[in-house]
Length: 205
Image (cartoon, rainbow, N blue to C red; front, side):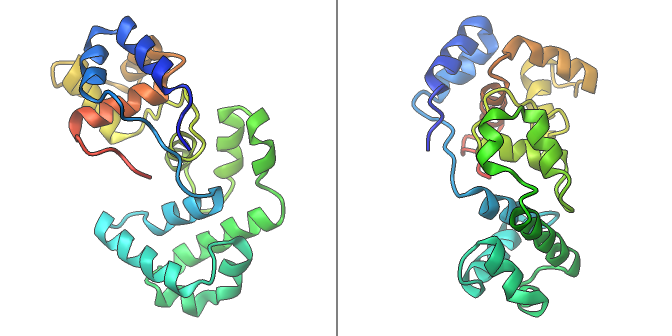
């Protein structure tokens, strides 16, 4: 699923910000695309925490091969021994199990998300062990395609703003927030373009 607002957002960002206009022009035709269902996306984010991309891909491949389907019920039924055998640490097994139980118990309200604010969804997700604010923000950008998420603690965003707006100097958190105000209500889109300014390959999640 593509972000239906992408063309409008890109155009408005380019018109309002000459620096952003230059970045947008380099990636005409590219867009943010949502992949995967919410439970599978969040599970994969937990699996990949604090390990390299290559290691995360390897563990995830074993995980997918071992579990019949990436659903809350199947993940819980898999059991600790099987999940540990896929390469998950004991703590990550606990985290994945807690996520599955939150879905099964109805504590995560996917069907209500369209009527909920970003902050409300972040609060719901961060109640799960192993999911912090940054993970929830990435989920809102890449899975839910929320248009105005601005992940202040993201190192890539901080570096890109430093390079493009601050003569290479990493901005303080307050300054990063101030700079981001110019990109409302499309801060997710601006963040995506800023990531691309550092790496021409599209960011995936």
